[in-house]
View: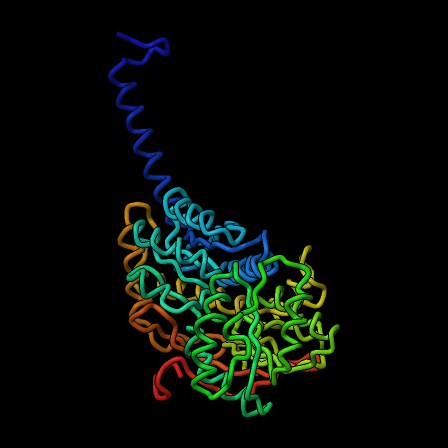
Length: 410
């Protein structure tokens, strides 16, 4: 029996099967020429500035990698999804990246609130997820072995930051105000800072009646009025810098010119412009004016791109979180190059495991601010700096390390 084309049915069947086989082989070969890595950033919502800057940074790294020949000859594709800093949306984004886009690893999510929900999904999907900003204690430890954080536990940072704050400004008493809707800010403001302040011999004047506000609040005049009535030597502001700016501006308006201390969330050039006369003390692993070939090269490459990007401040500088996400994907690239990752669909599970094992054993990776490693909890081991910001600039005052001083990463 023949078909309308005149070819025997059996021959057509064989040819059709061959075409399918060839098409599948071609698709497999094609996929192997492209390496996909995912990223989850808040390009909308309360932390949109950070997410948009992260996206610019990732596009730069993608271009730099491909201009240099790609990864083992394959083109790098970074798939970026917006979670709007919403935990459920971040978890859904990871499912899509891992299940639909078949990425080898994921950079993000940014916030601790999102990481707490997303990291368990990473373990379920068996794909590495590394946060560029989460610093609430224990978040990665609870989600071994696939969760990592390229940030230092805020409790570790506070143990160096608070004593410097006390000594520099002769602080014996403080008032605390924090963002109750931000997981990291709430933890730092209600647990970490109170404990470290007490250990440092600093009294908390509003310990029994803590002051708080919610992300997005534009009027904090009542809270600052209460802070002023306490007449503290200093003020603890536990909030993302964009929210902390509202508090600092109100402090200036009411004449509460007192030194401020907080977590890594305060690091931004924008906060120093809100009230230049108010000194701000905060820790960071990277800042835009950091010295060193790697840091300076990074800033020179990404800063012009950030300042051209629609929706970002005209004088924006790369943040610690831009540096962190750049380092995260750079580590993934290094893992792919060194561990035999193929990028082929058939090897996806094995490839993801190779990247996980690389991250778990990592020591001495050349980061922008120095060597990087990870501890058994999945948290980064790297150097950090206590910075003093005033009159528009951040100056490093103390160098510390997230691990013992003689660790290779420090």
